[in-house]
Structure formats: structure tokens, C-alpha cells
Amino acid sequence: MKRLLLCALVVASIAVPGRGHADSVRHDASSIDESGKPMVLAERPRTSRKWEQIDPSVLGNIVAAANTNKIFLNRCAGGCTVTPGSTDSRSNRSTIPDQTSQLSAFSRGDAVWNNVVACMKDVFTPFGVEILTTDPGSSVNHFEIMIAGTPQQLQLGSGTGGISPFNCQAQYIPNSLVFVFDVWGNSIEDICATAAQEIAHSFRLDHVIEPSDPLTYFNFNGRKRFKDAELQCGSDCVNGRGPFGQTCSGANGQSHTCTCTGLNTQNSVSVLKALFGTGTPTPPDLTITKPKTGDNVMPGFPVAVEATDVNGIGMVELRVNSMLTASITQFPYVFNAPTTLTDGTHNVEVTAYDEFGASTKKTVQVVIGKPCGKPADCPLDTDTCIGGRCVPGPGVQGGLGTVCVDNTSCASGQCAADNKGNRFCVDSCELGEGQCPDGFGCLEAGENNGVCWPGHDDGSGGGCSTGSGGALAIGLSFLALVIARRRPRK
Image 1 (cartoon, rainbow, N blue to C red):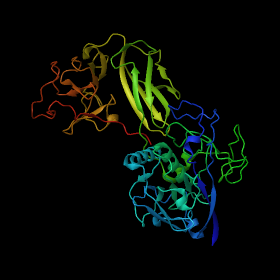
Image 2 (cartoon, rainbow, N blue to C red; image 1 turned 60 degrees about the vertical axis):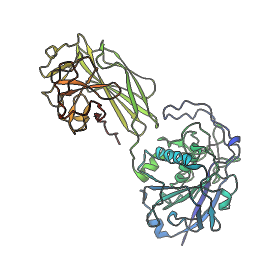
Image 3 (spheres, helix red, strand yellow; image 1 turned 180 degrees about the vertical axis):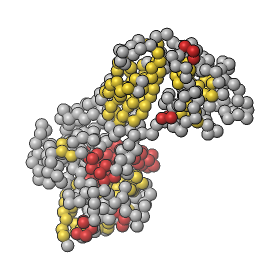
Image 4 (cartoon, one colour; image 1 turned 90 degrees about the vertical axis):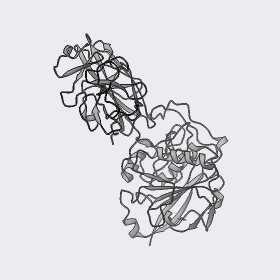
């Protein structure tokens, strides 16, 4: 049998009132600022080591990708029995306790627990991970985080906030069982960050000095998220040494080489994606604040954008008439359109990407020169006129009123569906202004937004009544009209 060193890593101290704090840094995006000198927690977390016998045949079967994507959050309702032995979440066995031990149940109530679960799902959204609150069972491979009990119940010191086995010989510890103790009060962010850190230790990841990453001992005001960047290992030094004897250096003596690799930095996002693949991050919130659809503008007109995302904005792109004009990676997101644009209608498209590639796209149409008053004013016979803008009409592929599958089917980038299953390419219009061409009416599509919908009678004389039995006879509540959204990029 081959001995494999497993080192138990203790997370943050419970001495919350005595903690230092990081210098104030704006974190409205996911930018990393290591220029400050964050203070280490006043009462230092302790580390301990556990030896574990691992069958070499098991070690040889551990490949780069994890054998499960399930992470079970266990609040130990009614208590949890943990038995000593080789780590195995399926049987609640761990190398951490010296004897069979009983963890008391998580005591902070359903509201705190549900918010912790939501936080963990949020933090792990960029990765192909399934966060569970129901035990998948003894026959299903899974990682497990017990969020319950006290460190003394596992024969650990009172200053221990959490603990995980740690292994440098494999990419991950199969069926790892880690612990976050019920010592954080009602602090959802502390419980969540500690849980994220402890399970990440089971994937060979070390501590880092970036305050906004879960793998740090430094305090941070906000939600900690794994950063897609090479981060300096450290934040856990005591008397000039890291937990495993590394020499510490840096401006505040808290930097050291990463335990498993010997390098100075690690990228936790790369490690987690290699293990679990890419998840489906929530796309950014995006608004084009200037110009608005239908605005009459001059060549070189400014384009102002508001873009936010919980994971931070990675880039915002401007396209005019489908041509990439500019890209910006830092706030404020303000562009100028080309000065060479000629008279006519122009499509302004803005795409915002978060740090993990999820995207949101918004478009507006503007007019340079004299606005159109009727389809005959447009340069193309196939165009129609909506609110002074020339747009592709019903006679062309992707034009107004064309049957569509999704947004990419439409020249306007808008495919709408009603509750009868009808799907048509639509374009924006001002409610009550009679802007839609013959055969169409301006139909409310939520939040006082309108779209030109085929056959709808908006009272302007452009559409025709569908009657009570028609496809759009939906009580004129318009709640069933949904603008189809693009799927986020992966």
C-alpha cells in the first residue's frame, strides 16, 4: 500500500469581530485589484495534517475530469454521524475525526440556509456543477460539504471555521467530504465563501491573496467569486512561513508558492473548468441608453451603454450595420459610431460579455438625414417604414412579419411569440403613434414597449381586427407575447 499525504486545511477563524479588512476597492466589475494591502484575520486559522492510506489502483483511476459533478450541501438535519477512515462522502467517512463523531444540525434557520444554497449555486454557475440539497445516496459518486456542528465535535480547536482534506497527487479527492462549521452566525457570505473554499481544496487549489476570491483568508465586503486569472498564492502565512513550510514574501509577507505546483500563481477557474466543464452563467444586464430607436442622428453619433453582471463585465462590443466598430473592456461603456455613415437607417448593435463569455445583445435603429414617412421613401423596394426608419419588409427573408424560429432568423434581431404558438419577426414601435405599416399594428410587449405585429388592430387603421376567434384573441392582456432571448454563449 502506498502512503498518500493528505493535509487538512483549516479555513477562517471564527473571531469575526477581530478581523482586519481590505482596503476599499470598487468591485462593480470582476476586475482584480491587488494594489491594496489587505490585512490578515487577527486570529490566524490553524492547519493540521492527516495521513490517509489510498489504494494505488484507486489513485491510478483518477483522471483529469472529475467522476461526478454533484456537490451535496448537507445541513445535517437531525445531526450527522461521521466515522473515521478513508475519505468517502457516500458513507460519511473522513480522515478528519479521530473517533466516531456526531455533528449537530445547522442552527441558523431555513432563510439563512436557502440563501447559502442560492449563493453556492451562484458562485458555481460558471462551471458544470450540480449543487444538491438532497443526499444522492450511498451508491452515487458525489462531493459533500457538511455545513453543521462545531469543530470540537470533530476533535478540532475552537478557532476552526472549516476543514478539508488536501491532496497533491491527484486532480481531485474522489467523493471528498469537507466541513464548514456552524460558527459564522447568520453571515451568508462567510458561510458560502468558506464552503466554496473548502471544496476547492479537494481539487488541489491553494489559498490566494486576492480578497474577492473564495480561496483567500483576507476579508472582502461582498460576494467572493473564483477569478479567471493567475492569482498569487498566499494570505495564510504565520511567522514568515506558509502552511506547508513555504517561505513567505511580498509587501505584507503573505505571498508564497502554491503548495501542489511550486508555482507562484494558480487559476482556479481553469482548474474547475478542467474538472467539470463550463456551466451556463447568467447573461449580463444590458441597456442602450443613447441613442433610442428612431432617433435622428449625425454621423459619428455617440452610443452610451449600461452593462452589469454578477460575474463582472469582460467586454462590450459595438456593431453598426453588422460591422464591428469598437470594443471596450472597462467602464464607462461609451462609443462613437463611424463618421462615414451616409443618410438612411442604420442598425446599432451592442453586445456585452461577462467574464465567462455569457452574452446579451441589444439593438436600436437610428436615422441619418430625413426620416422616411412611408415605404416609398426608402431606398429599397423591399423596405418598409416604421417610425421614420427604413427596415426590411415582409417581402424579404427575415423581414417584418416573417415566420421565425429565434432571433437570428430576423433582420431586426427580434423574434416574438404569442400564446397561440405563432412566431414572427417584429420591429420596435411607439405605442399609440400609428407607426406600423399596413397590415400591422403596434402591440404592447411589456414595460410600455411595442412591436409591429401582423394583423393586430391598434386603432390607427394600419392593422386589421383578428376577431375574438383569431390567433391574437388573447384578451388584449398581451402577457403572452414574449420576445425570444438569445441563448448565452458558452
